[in-house]
Image (cartoon, rainbow, N blue to C red):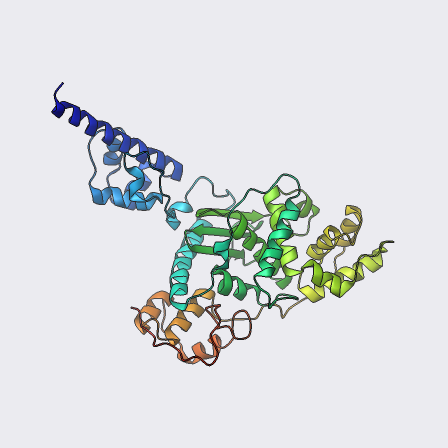
Length: 416
């Protein structure tokens, strides 16, 4: 056989391998031929033929397909090198098979749009030099036993990164946005049982809390719960959705390990053990009567801004109460007197605040700000809003970074 025939056969086999890899990536993404064709302006028939080892696709078409499937263009190359994963495009991510069935089409569209906003939020974070504490955490499967302990350890690790926050956390949403670079939004989920969702596409991170949650302590707990999913469960691209009846014992006792870990994380983040012991003292050896236990839960929830049920279960895990029956007796008639003042009110969401701050610091032009906001700038409101501050004294409001006192500000650059 001549060398020319060998080269031709080698090229044909390489093209077939390209097609097989494309097919595997497409099936893994959950997209059918028609959906992929619509997203890439490549005829489904051409994609099918290429996957089957017939015909060819140009470099531009392969690059568009790779982008839609969330992989690097090099993933299709005929090589033994490991494939480099790229973030899955939000619209593709929300159409995948792994998305909870409780998220209906309107919810998925809202989450995809929110992820696109989170991408802009993260890019603005680059300009503002925000902290990204989330990047120091990596997903790890929760153990079947002892998931609570893992959640507690992770929460205390987060607390150690926030040395200025020794007691109750106020302004959790701004903390999540300013120090972890995670955009937090609200959405009216179609299914009333959905409490919240966490999404990630590369550096774009998004938490969405149900607009049905009106009580501030419940909102704070669900937000902290979703933060746990962001730090401990989501890989480079992924989505989780949480649903259930928040006040039921099943929400705390019968969840899978990842949810138990996230519950423990949320409780310990908002009410760390040392701070609880300073407030309540050590658990009494002789235990507590039901009336005393109720007073203990009420005192703690008022201090730390948790719901009665969340704090009751947290105190059980901290050994203040000896039996599940005690907690169940407490939560049958919870003291849910309104608690407010832990989360500040704001007329702007996180992306809007970040856009306004970037514009006020002359990092982006007015036209770029309008493009990101979808409306005209409100300069007077801008200056009032950005003075509110994100994490702690000495920290620049929307960026979450500290500004060195006494140092001159560097010359700013306007990005278009």
